[in-house]
Length: 132
Length: 331
Image (cartoon, rainbow over all chains, first blue to last red; front, side, top):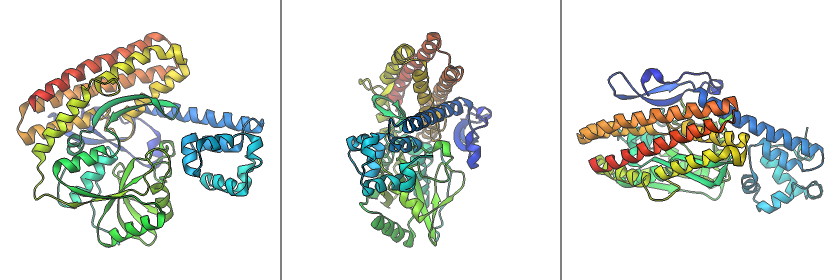
């Protein structure tokens, strides 16, 4: 990549006032570094990945409202987690976390366990019980 | 207190922290040099491991490896500590800062407030330097950022004790013993040899053989997974290749910069020539990313387009195979 080819496309990096560093060659073929504001091919890839997550969140929300799963799954998706990550944060086995997705099991959880989830998701137990 | 520490932005966090810490100790080592000596360049495909619901593709060595290899090869002794609880972790950090010793920390990205929201995933192998404390605020030099930044005690606690794969457990490290002069020449040869070995390894999950395996799978994705998932997977490849930290072209440009610097240092004309070749390979990776992005941008599901990017990957594998065989001979 030549110095002039370092992409300066618009991207979400700008929201944090942030430019990343790239390596490129100058007119004499010497390597140097240059800042880039973003590059479309990867901005699109990231955008798609974010959209995918949003779809998962919306889907989880719908299923919570339909009574098919518990708010634990919704908050897990909202925090871009999967079961292994969530289990590691709350310090429980994965099968236990998975079991807590069942509304019938979730409704009978002890205040202690609910608090653990609430702490990880940074919401009150109240908000954990009923999602908005 | 504030330690007199020079922040220099780098493409990748791990090389950047090493390079910045070494500079503080009076040894000027560039980011590409750290990357090359630590044999950072790689290609690996781990279809049985999933991140963000897509298989793992990586263009560089495992987190921590670059660092360890670099330290070992140039003869620097590192002190590393991990902690069970946050209180000792914080006490040890404060103790080092009080002794005027900037330290490297391994942290999780998800709770880093200064990162753009879209970039905050549960990735736990990010690195930064803490170079001071002002009241209850830590002074942070995050090598991928243009400027230095700060984190509160609570924020730093949270990222140091992020959970999930590669959980940092408060991991803190800093160099404690140095050789009189850094023996870069020998270290460069060792670093290059290992990269050549890894890239041409006779196993399907690393090096050029992994690229061929990915290419083979890309051809079948639209049929076996459906267009949506196939595009998600393609997007993951491009993101791993180009996301913050690679310096562009899946680390190939940083590696070319390393070969150029080494060629001058060792007075080896062949390395300078090969550096140019690596730059061209990097350009070809960029072309691959552009074509792959066209597929997921238009959401076109024509098998033709998938075959085309697969062909590009096969061509890249062939080029890199020849390249690393040549590189092995000239060193």
